[in-house]
Amino acid sequence: MAFENLSERLGKAFKNITGKGKLTEKNMNDMLREVRMSLLEADVNYGVVKDFISRIKEKAMGQEVLTSLNPGQMVVKIVHDEIVALLGTEDAPVNYKKSGITTIMMVGLQGTGKTTASAKIANLMKKKQGRNPLLVACDVIRPAAIDQLKTLGESIGVEVFSLGVETKALETAKQAMVYAKENGYDTVLFDTAGRLHIDDELMQELSDIKAYVQPDDILLTVDAMTGQDIVNVASSFHEQLEVSGLVLTKLDGDSRGGGILSVRAITNVPVKFVGLGEKIEDLDVFHPDRMADRILGMGDIMSLVEKAQEKMDMEATTKSTNRMMSGEFTLTDMLVQYEQIEKMGSLGGMMKLLPGMGQLAGQIDEAKADNKIKKSKAIIQSMTPEERENPNILRASRKNRIAKGSGVSVADVNRCLNEFEKMKQVMKQFSSLAKGGKMPNLGGLGAMKNMRAMSRAMGGKKGRKF
Image (cartoon, rainbow, N blue to C red; front, side, top):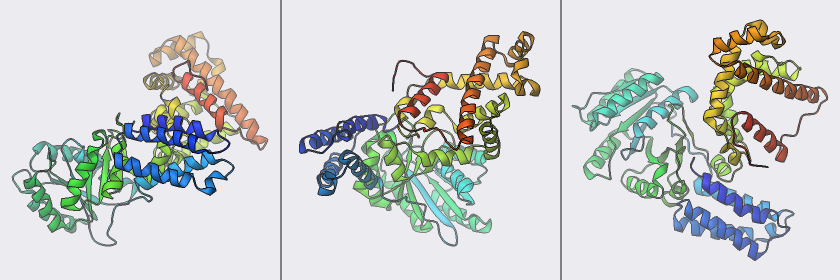
């Protein structure tokens, strides 16, 4: 994931200052030197880094910070606020028209995932924002792009308008607008031809489409893997088309991420969407403050909550949770929990959104954890309702039947039952605390130890202590 190395380096830099009783020019300079090197190694533009460090030093050496009870934490807050300022102090939503059809041009270099991003945005608009989008295939240079867009559109239930490669892109755009008005669409996304580089002829095609469509947004897709070149690409497109926003793709890849911190400061073009994976739903609105939290290892609780509300069966989860808190916990409840975990995605991905859990997430063998969940689900699903409610009746003959039915060994069945007993004991403790008006403190070191135990149970690596 982008920013992982930067997060780790910044964490080490802050450790040397957050434990100090007071700030001195020496320990401040040591910390700033580490921050500077962290940003440069993350591929942030040199000029941006220089201004960033200068602003932090000016604010951190102010009287309010120096006389505070915890100056180290104040410095971390200053760094956080400055990262937010680099990324954009506010969210940059789509410029929807109050009435009429909102038009959006999707532009970018070849290989940045522009066509896929167009479909992902249309999917988000339809499912999360209540829009009725139409995708328009204006990439008549590459026939495969039209086929790709049609396939993606069909998978999300969004219509794709195309006149084929024989019709020029501008004419396709004109007829698409007529079609959108006649059929009640409120948002039209034009997937234009990608470029290997900034090409004058193709750029003129974009200018012609822009002149006719008068788009409310021109979104440029940029690949997070390209580093500082994001700035050069964004600047070139912005000069000729006045780009209104960026769609950052492949943020889940192994990139340093520095270009993202540079592009807003240099071009003043905000990031509007970020792609976080290959699946059609793996795209979200960009929130600068949440990204700053993740860069500084503070997690992203808001995104985790939103993901849970979107993915999980809240009725089933609430029912199961209420049973657990009342002291009841059966294998059926355990099955519900496993199903909800699968809907949320990987355990490691969820842990990265929890404050202080980012480094622990890297210790989990996600393939092994996923395999354990699938095995446990198959075992429970091979049981009768009576066996799920009362596992004490499971003798050797029943266990053999369950093992055969789920395609596992009897040892796997016993392991699943042992995990169930452990979880049942934990739920009893929660129930007792809830009835007594107390809930366990899940913060700090205790939470990290609990999560470490969970990661080991799900296939995490041993050897690291907290």
